[in-house]
Length: 207
Ligand code: URA
Ligand code: SF4
Image (cartoon, rainbow, N blue to C red; front, side, top):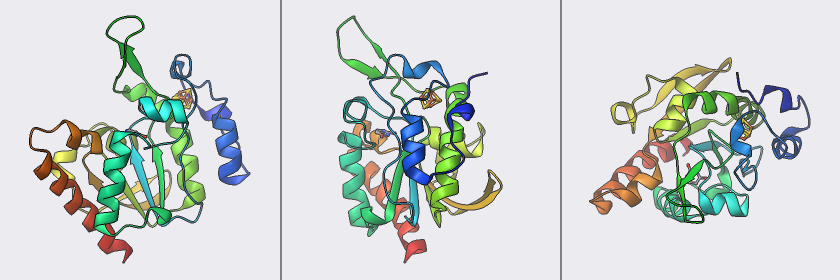
C-alpha cells in the first residue's frame, strides 16, 4: 500500500523532516499538487494543531493555514488566549487534493481517503515525536480519524479532553470542528462560538 515511511529520516529534527517531506512520493497526491505543505512552528511548541490537508492557498504558498480557514483559526486562537507562537500547526495529509469542475477552472478541495491519511501518517508521527506537545487540538473529522481511527465522531467528543495512546505515546487531545466548517455554516456566528468554546478548553489546559 501507499506509505510515506521510506521517505521519513530518523534524525535531524524538524528541518530534516521538512526537507525530506518536500520529496515525498508516498502516495499519488504529490502528482497534481504544487508542493508539500509541511507543519509550521517551533520544535518546543506546547500545543499541536492538526488540520486535514492544505487548501488552495496553502498549496501555492507552501505553508499550512494561510488561507481563509487559517485566518479564522488565528482569530479564534487569539480570542481563546492561545499564543500562535506556542502552537505548531500541521495537517493529517501534506499535499492538496482537489478536483476541477471543468478544465482550467477553480480547484475544489476533495477530502482525503483513509488510505491517503494512513499513507501520510508517518510524517505526523515524526512531527509528534519531535515536538512532543503537551496537547493536541484536532481540527475536524479527518484529523480525528487520522490519529484516533475511523470510528472517530467529532460531534460526540468536541470540546472534551481525551487521553489516548498514539504511536506509543500517551497523548492529551481536544477535538473541535474544522475552521472551514465555520465558514460554510448557515449560522456562522454560532458555529464560530462553538469553535471558540472548544479552543478555550484547550487554552485552560495550557494555562
Ligand atoms: N485546511 C486545513 O485543514 N489545513 C490547512 O492548512 C488549510 C485549510
Ligand atoms: Fe507523501 Fe503525504 Fe504527499 Fe502522499 S500526501 S505524497 S504520503 S507527503
